[in-house]
Image (cartoon, rainbow, N blue to C red; front, side):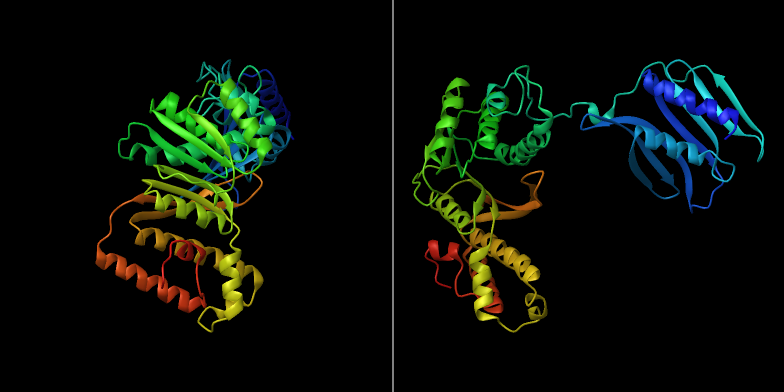
Length: 395
């Protein structure tokens, strides 16, 4: 390494340490990586850790890689050779420093006036424009998401992102709902109430929408905890009720939500929503045992049987068939459906979310749907789907 190169790396280190670093560019590439033109480097913070973000700019696309600071500087140093990048510029708010190869042996280091006089925002450290803000939310503190000052705990960052993702998914759906004097929302299988509280807060304080939200949960300790937090938060129209989804009765439901309801509990929830003529039904199912047992029992011969002999493929197929039939049954009962991905938790895979909005169907459309349900059941050897059974359909 030349003295100029050593000085350049020291200048880079100092700029990062003193927080005057703006960015770094590597140019005039003479290496063997096909179509690589430039590399641009900036500092970011990911999960409270300082990193250097490298944008590798190729002729037709960009690739971004993030490195810890020390590793990133080492990568930069390795690129500063005659048969890689022959020109490097570190930009700071005090001065810009340029390192270049004049030929294969001779180098030059020079400084010029700073191009930038202000530090850029650290992109991953800037609070995103979230629909739900953490500050001033007593329930978030009570649920161990934030500290007393409204700062999200490090261990709860993923949970807070999940809550906001949930609100972002529901927001446009809620705005499309028919007008009601009081919007009646039921969250079946509310658990500890993270999402139930967030939805009520969003309806009340962001949309200014008169709403009554009920969380149904069979674990008494969680029901008591959530009711206590709701009372402390002065959420007068938020209530948690002890019981199972199957036991719960309510003929006035405008929005029905059921996330993580296991196996046929999701069918119980959809059944309740259809019977109440809910405007919106949103479910994120988990476990699909009932249809899997049906497929395993009959082992129908078809074009997919070579896949279904493998357990993992059978499990995935059962999930798709279960939720596909749920969507068809919802459409038969007058809903428009779509299936999207929903990140249920940072430590679990992405889940499927079924969204059903009330929309009338013609008799011809309903007949076509019944035929499709019948054909699907026959193809996979399914005697019945639990939702079909709950609704009294005979297909």
